[in-house]
Image 1 (tube, rainbow, N blue to C red):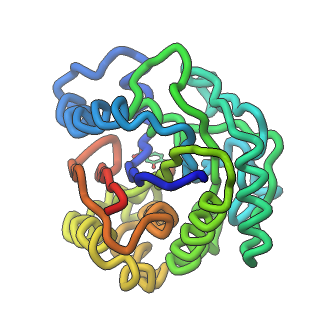
Image 2: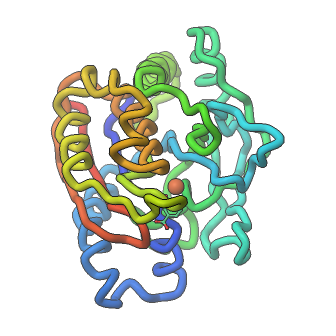
Length: 279
Ligand code: DHB
Ligand code: FE
């Protein structure tokens, strides 16, 4: 049987990817950011998950405004790094698990969640930056990845509650898959940030730290936070945080917090990162 062993959440700031790709991780600005991932790199080297269900948002790379799925699951054998305007990141092609992805799609859709099936999808910084933060710069990514893209770019986003319930449905799907696999679920994006308009540059440390507390210890209550609260308090891009609730919904009610990290700033963003194991 496949099982969900752990959850990881992290911001996915594109400038972090650029710092890695351009060899600037030792620059004074970046040292405290990458220090926050030292524990996690050692942890994941020991965990050796077989598959990561990686929840992220596409930033108009694979999808344009012509077609915006609320939830899209990558069922392909592989996913190429997207060209976001400067050429694709020089990172390995992401290998999928088409069979498990198709199983999750079947299980979750029959469980009343509408997923779009993506049989071809380039993956942008939302997915590749978290992989780089945890795995560094390997020749091949050390495990398979099932991309799960969530629309938090074009209004309306899915509610936190729906995201949390989707995480629970993904867990039921994984636990009904016959092969013996260790599966992690990752949630990316956030924390507070706003890239546009009069409030550009907004950071809310108090909101972010309360969110970190509650996603570990009160995910049920947190899942009922209305989406307008995210936008008002954490900025228009702070709404990315609802994706962390998919990760959390896939875990046990009680989890062990192995690592917590918070740092301001990275580019325009407050960086948050959690490593959670099923208790
Ligand atoms: C930034 C952060 C993001 O999450 C993103 O998708 C794009 C840019 C930033 O901080 O610059
Ligand atoms: Fe983003």
